Image (cartoon, rainbow, N blue to C red):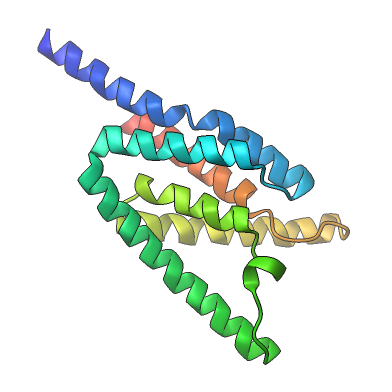
Amino acid sequence: RQGVEGDNEGLTEKSMELLAFVPLAFMIRSDYKERVIRIYPLLFFGILTVTGSVWRWGWEECVVRVVGGVGVLAFLTGGVLLYLLLKYRRRINPFREYIGTGDGVFLLCLTPSFQLIEFVCFLIIAFTLTLMTWTLGLYKNQSKQGIPLVSTVGVCYACYLVYCFICF
């Protein structure tokens, strides 16, 4: 009897994280079709992701994951800023010209879902697939501007959630 209840608790915790699929699907579609991330799906996605992570891992572990993830994102942002500064020889705001604010907030919302090493590996895989998808898209349709970061990273995150749901 206890084993069955324990299994049900794990299923409930995982189901909480799977609820994030609903706003994630809206964001993926919106980013791919319109290159826009709407605030309400992003807000609901963030709430569901953080709530699911706190429920599953506890708030202490969640804070550790967020701090580690923010550190990784800050390091990447610093690298991008340095690259753009060296390339264009002037100070720019990358969130105005190159990276959407919705992209940054979306990546922040992912941080409680991953341990530090998992997050780094996830970002490497997701960003590589994003660049490959974007490069192939350039050859097919020259009129599309920008990189659909939330779309491709969101699909990678959805695959990650399904993998975790099935395997763990």
